[in-house]
Amino acid sequence: MHEESFPEVQGGGSLILAWQIRNKRVLVVAAGRILHVLNADAKVTVVSPREGLNPEVAYRIEKGQVDYIDRKFEPSDLDNVDMVLTAVDDPDASTQIWKLCKERKVPANIADVPPECDFYFGSVHRDGPLQIMVSTNGKGPRMANIIRRSIVENLPPNAGEAISKVGRLREMLRKVAPAPEEGPKRMAWMVKVSDAYSLEDFCEMDEEDMKMLLTFYAPDEVPQLSSLKKQRDKS
Image (tube, rainbow, N blue to C red; front, side, top):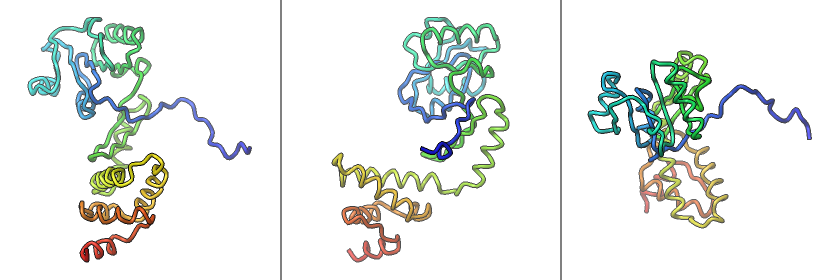
């Protein structure tokens, strides 16, 4: 075994994940990144005196997008909670919430206090199913925004739509070849399809094109899109 064939460990990072929190219960104290968790289909409860609400939080409450408790945080608010986000001006109060979360093993993000965060939000770009996050591990949020904008400027404008089409094709393929033993072949064929077609090709595809393409799964072939459309027109 050659050591030089393995990447060097670089400590001090964080594990960047796409955390599925659909229907998870998220407690937001005072204010916070409400839109991030709403976009992830979480069940959000806001605890804050009404005079402490920022305009966006007040709007979300008015529209019924979150549950609302008009008072200061109480320890009982942590009952049956899966995640906590806080943005409280009082450092002592923030630390107390953090300690309670640690006792109950509830992951928490204490705004602007990196040592009291189990996770960071980073700077996020969203285009349909495509999500890109740049994290500085809490050290430079402004720099994360600058780097994220630079990345987005170089992304194709139709990337999100193309990914949606790929996702739809994968769903259809699982219906054509549902058996577990087909898994490796399904994966290998989708790799071929992803390599053979451009983002523009995927965006151009409709449901009938995908149905025709799936007829090439059994022989393990991937025709060019122009050839696929010609065959579709003949059928």
